[in-house]
Image 1 (cartoon, rainbow, N blue to C red):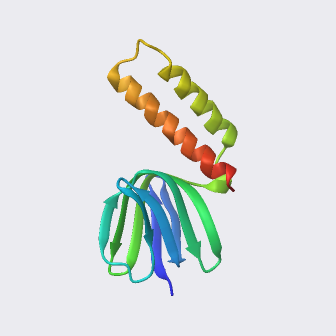
Image 2: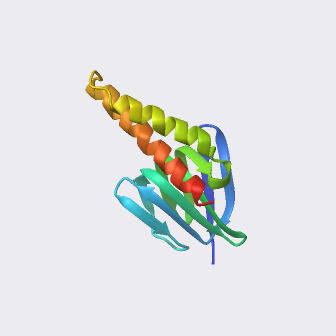
Length: 133
């Protein structure tokens, strides 16, 4: 049994097809969506998305946005969505190093500290997903 899944980002359509399962981090924790899931809407957090299709399982770094289930159709609208095999680990490591460097400074405003912390968490999610290819 499957459900219709559509994944979009500001850059366009990432995936459209059938899925057997979707696991994604919401603002309240990880949720698993299976066929015949009740209608549901939640803001996305920052973490790994796992999509099981009839062709296999794929992983991705998914950061921000929303997930909605309506009448058996699942739509994931992500701010950032990167398949594991497309993650540039070197770039993610460089982003981590830059964020850690910023966080070690004592002259940053509260806003800049929050931004640097978010950059660090994004870089760590991308590395975690990318290493588990």
